[in-house]
Length: 296
View 1 (cartoon, rainbow, N blue to C red):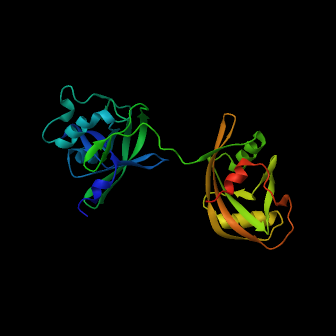
View 2 (cartoon, rainbow, N blue to C red):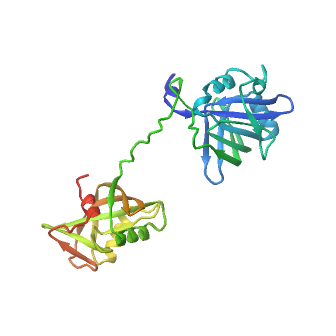
View 3 (cartoon, rainbow, N blue to C red):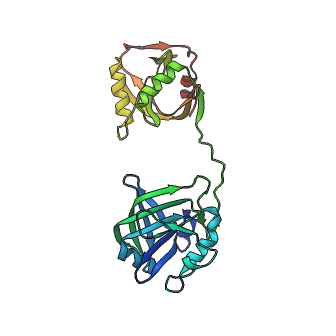
């Protein structure tokens, strides 16, 4: 267990404070992370120190996420205590500016700066967790955050990892229908059914073509149950079986894009009748349909 912690990857927060006894101070907190979107809450983990005592007194602190070219500043902030020197007074080292909402110096050149007011202080194992609500925050798109892992500082690659989504061109009518299904969500999440009898497959009318019977699924709902309910609504008595696979796509029409995730089930039908659906022995031309039927 001794070296397990070295295999996590973290950003590094330069935590700034100001108190009556210990004055202004900056420390390096490897464990700095946001823990809530709304309200925006940021947690830092530290020991008893001038930074903690300042926070305990004033109930405010600054979070300055170190950028790639600030490794030396992190070393200085983490290498000395506020009881030893005023780190922020070192010449040609830290460049600060006045905060808007709290009486704490904030640091220039960081990837992100946030002014925080304490909401929770709690002992967590061998550290103290301080959670603050961000009163204001700003970020710099050009300054990527410094990463610390396996005992060293590292840089993020500026090249993005491909998403693995298959890009599929669709018709305007299909895009309109898919966007309607998404209900304005950033990603369309749907359940789709593969229903076969002999050499035929059941397809549902969709916009200007045909596609696997499918239905959008809301967060928290059971995909299998929602799919079976939809199939019943089009006149099919169907049991959804095993998950055949997942198809992750980027649907494109002109300059419009929509991300879509389809969970595909193998299903067994019990009644032949259906409304707005038909059996096909040969697949019609439909790029999305064919992609959904590819071997997972």
